[in-house]
Length: 273
Image 1 (tube, rainbow, N blue to C red):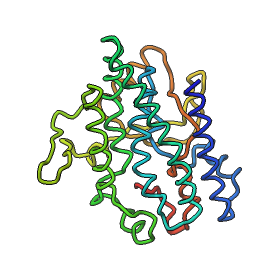
Image 2 (cartoon, one colour):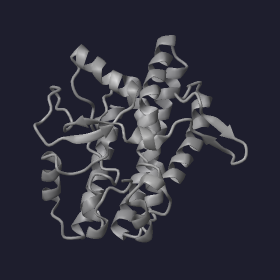
Image 3 (tube, rainbow, N blue to C red):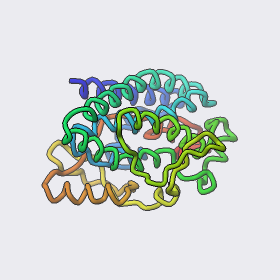
Image 4 (cartoon, rainbow, N blue to C red):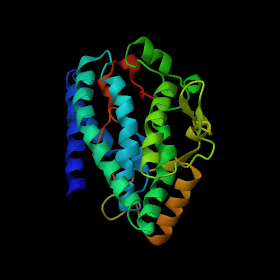
């Protein structure tokens, strides 16, 4: 029931963004057709498999948590309809993050098997969550232009650092280890320092198709790219071997799915590209 309520919220978030596109004269039905046909861009995080109930909690905690860091900044974007949509979305996403964190905390203090399940989910979702902020600013072809237009007010690296600083103490509070043995606290900056170059991981991609149907099959659409670490690739192979096709996908936008229709043509690129 909790998951269905969240899916309902996420569908509403997509509606907020689609309504914003209508202010630019773009037909909503056209955008939905592009999504179903595999032509619309969306965050590659939605191509990852969810292998257990713990994944649902970790998605709320880490993925929604990363989205909130992004969206809080985008709520001050220069394009009014988009910024106002982000304000409404952020309020609901905060509930999603709290729900996810509560699921993780409950599992972490449960049986050894339950704690192992949530630790496994964190191991698989940590690096993809960091990749949601895009490549390093020095490698991003779009950040400078988006900043100049006032769409972005902070760079990818600053936002990613903010997410790390918020998440590390949360993980420590419930006894969960983040899968970065080189993660260190930098006394000079008062922030955590990741031990891996996220920009390098960001470029290690796998070809993915459209989200899976309920039967596990995927529509025959054009290829997309999704970034995975080695752990996630192992998870995919294990899923294929067990006959569990596809992944859980909710109808959510987060501002990346249809951003190209919301912003002026000169900015019609993914915001964290």
